[in-house]
Image 1 (tube, helix red, strand yellow):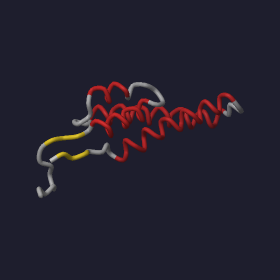
Image 2 (cartoon, helix red, strand yellow):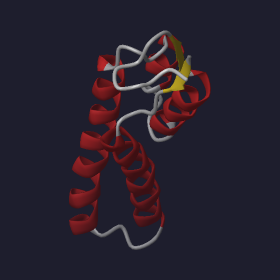
Image 3 (cartoon, helix red, strand yellow):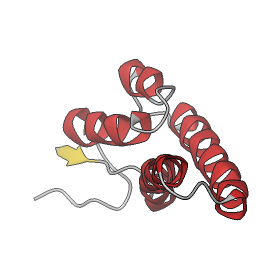
Image 4 (spheres, one colour):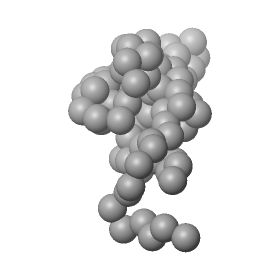
Length: 100
């Protein structure tokens, strides 16, 4: 039986937050450069980035390429998710699955 395993929802949210916060930081830098916005977006991006890296490295089913992709700032989380979605197939019995 072949089962497709999806990455945890929190990892998906953090990967999208990582990219969106980077885009917002760069837009702020290129336009008004508001200090209050920078002080909010910087830590948000940093926390999302670290969460993506650590969460992916803790996944047992994550291939090495997905783990390496997470260290690319901004888009690494989404690249790793794409790699996990595409390559994650496990052969063998899965807990809770019934054989037909």
